[in-house]
Length: 404
Image (cartoon, rainbow, N blue to C red; front, side, top):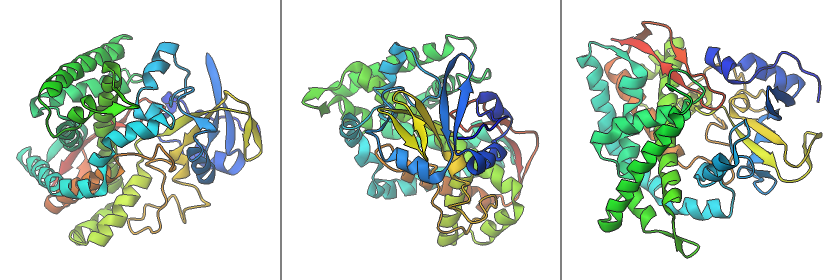
């Protein structure tokens, strides 16, 4: 480990830009970098593709449950709640809980959903023309498709989609002043969404339907029914992860096509070329990962690339850096919609926490982007995009554009 100075990977940096220059320096000079946090325990920033995969596939050594997936340490109460979310628990309980909903996200189910996704994507693309082509893309377009799909899968009625949208923003945007009106607002949003989930669960307990909330309230784990709080946390995980991350991937995809007009023109020319759209979707994912990182905590003394890590210390796995690793990607700073292979880590480094909704996200990104370009081959910015202030979510919160 070397003394790399001038590195800052906390939330203010991400609000300005994606720090690709800092990551390139770390991969080259200090791939397991000790990063201080004012007022908190520091962490090791892990920036190489190979090391992130190794940690991701060793949950017995690199725990998420011990300290959560956030960079900063949590209160005991918050840690207890986070350990009830799929993303916040370790095997073997994680494995059993994931099996409760994995069927809904299986490839055959995504194939069944694809026609509905394409229909909804076409309607959204048509709505752009009705607005004269001028839209604020994040809220008016990018947020709509993933919100509609995940709400239907979970069991939320269409009339309540905007409530889920607002609660999600308030809960994940806790570092961004645009999403919170007070210090307590994020907690208040959690209380509100829990109450909504409780009412939904009570209804499905009496009258089950073909949705995920019905499966949860009637499921047993280790011979016992799930508690109300476990169902609440499961519901929040699915609703937030199911719309927030894909929304940001869609916004990032459009912005990358605005910045790369030749690639956009190539996609328009090959609008019905499935092979091209498949490789392009993987490049959209590599280029615009929606999660910067996940934290893990060492369960025993170990090392990464020879750098000693003590039990209880944090390693933060930077997927954004791994997706530009020169040891894995040829010309990683080139946006190449025909790139193959494309071993990006946007959905994680493998192991038990590989993203459950990866197939669903791919289908939505491909469908919406394709239908937009089919109808509106030209798009340009009408104002300056604004990034989310977050050291966890790679979000674009404002993207004003003109389609034509």
